[in-house]
Amino acid sequence: MKSLVKKFFDNEILSYLFFGLATTIVSVVSRMLCYEVIGNEILATIIGDVLGILFAFVTNDTIVFKQKRQGWFVRLIKFFTARLATMGLNLLLTFIFVTSFPQIIGQFVNNNIKMVNTIETFVAQVLIIVLNYVFSKIFIFKNKDK
Image (cartoon, helix red, strand yellow):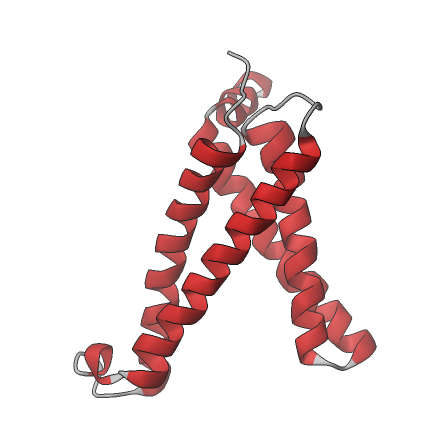
């Protein structure tokens, strides 16, 4: 069993997906807890996102891409920049396909705006997961020891 777990976490893509799910849980739970405490959804969202990004960086840096300790701060800045870029892409896709032109997706779901939003969200998340992995692999965590 122990060797199976080790093999799983030695697989970069499986490890990345596992910690991506864990990051989502950290973000959502911290957002919900912050909202309960402070009662402000915008601030709770920001705090949840920042905690999720920090958790994702630590797990990607140490476990997924197995980086040396040296240079971590530069990688953190690059990581935040990449995550902000994909967050911007998420907002742009939402603005285009849900806010401005919902009929593009709506034609397939009887123009049900909730379904349009749901479909756009899932499509955007797949694209964002792939882009986050590519950005991490190519631009951020590229000094991996073999």
